Image 1: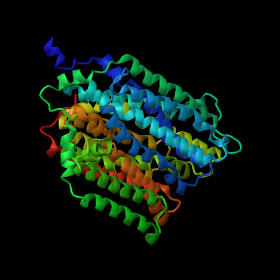
Image 2: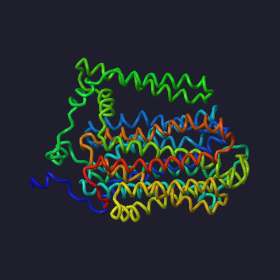
Image 3: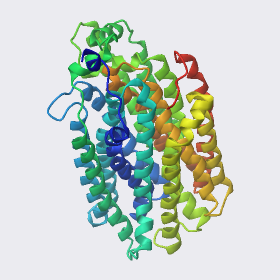
Image 4: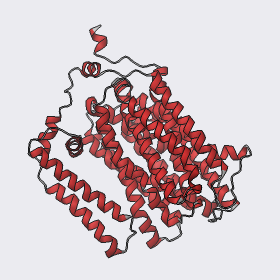
Length: 511
């Protein structure tokens, strides 16, 4: 009996299914957001150049929410458990945002209301999503981490397929895809409402069908591993000088000054403000640690961020360039496809709306490919060449897919591009997390996963703030060139991935 208490039971397929099924619903929400928000904003009167500024709410909320939720969920234990209270809270708020989003045209300030709903939706999805990443590490033994994240990735792909294809499917069922007077089409409205229901039901499935291990059980499972000790983090923080904090603040001020000096878009001010704010918070946290203050959320988050394990630092660089490309794709695929393939920038035209619906099909394909690749291609490839090389290969295939958007003007042929993008997407969702879950202390898995997701959010903020300035200066009205930036980003990530292997104790096998 003692041996059983000190080792997590091996999960069968049903257990793996239940642990990650909630992500199916969460990804429906993300897919509806990613495939339709540029269409919503343009329909409500936004220009192409203003899209990054309107999208900025999404990554900003992730930057703030994920470390906080990670920190709190590591320290939560109540009747629902450790991570499940956050699943439920996020699901309720996400469903509310999805229901309200299509009502934007009826509001006094439609664009502002839509941006506010995007902020609420992204924040709520992150409240549920971040603990789901740690949940796999909580519930599975180390030799099942790769399998757990593969199943989670399959559900992400399946959920994204459903969320992406639904407007196109409704149009084929006879639902109107064009609205006179510039309102949102019924295909979009009903997709958001159906997505709200699906998201809530899927998350509730995981909540009802799983039982989290108590803190005492987790401590027993950890065995010889050293428990998380905040005093170690505080001592390391107290030993730091204020130089790094001053550096962050200086960088923020310089970025803000560059807006007027270089004529950059005003959204870049947000990036500068965030850099300066982190410098200020770092200085406060270091000061409190030097004064011997007790551990608190700020000092824990700043201390853990400054003291990230080496493998996490190296993977962070890969994530940075990986997600830069993804955010470029989500913002610009609709403008690129409608303008260059379907030949229209008029959001009220049939051609534009046909192109926007085709984007849903393209997104469905890459997500469907990701679902299949997660369970079939990635395990086989990683057994052959290892996890690190697998991720580099997949990112390279994705980069080739982005290049096709620059060269191809045939809607059907773009489906081929989505195959490479889908394979890369599957790897991005599985490989880094499987590596981290097996190389990070379990007691701090939530906060480290939250901090790791900062490197998903920061590149999105950069794209949302800087890309608009670059495109306005060099490629005004030509969004297709953003896909070239996306291809370059994934190629850089593929090369950077090779540095990760040196930080691993041994090559992990994806099973």
